[in-house]
Structure formats: structure tokens, C-alpha cells
Length: 64
Image (cartoon, rainbow, N blue to C red; front, side):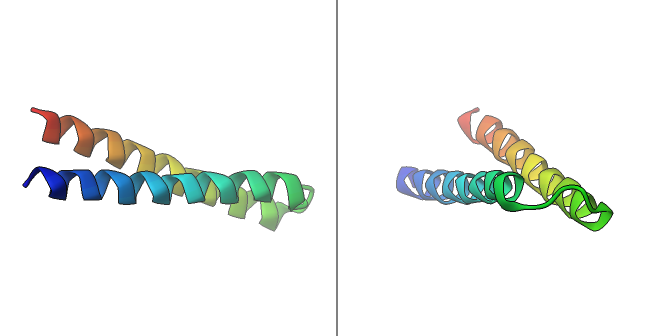
């Protein structure tokens, strides 16, 4: 049972890591002067933020 908990942490952490790498790449490579790119960046940022919050909530509930 304990191995199963470890699996979701690794998977979710890796997923968040790739999201953050994509966010950084979009900041470095993307052209944020156009409105559509700003909207896409904001949406992508909200997705990353939501996943981080979900990870923290799930981590707190499994530790209890």
C-alpha cells in the first residue's frame, strides 16, 4: 500500500515539473506582445497553479 502512495507522488511531481518547464520555455521563446499569447500564457499559468494546489491538498490528506 505504501508503494502505491509513492507512485502518485512521483507521477504528479514529474507532471508539475514538465508543466513548469513548458511555462519557462513559453516565457523565453514566446512573444508576449500579442494579446492571444498573453491569454494563452495566463491560462497555462492557471493550469500549473491548479495542479500545484491539487498536489499539496492530496499530499496533506494522505499524510494524515
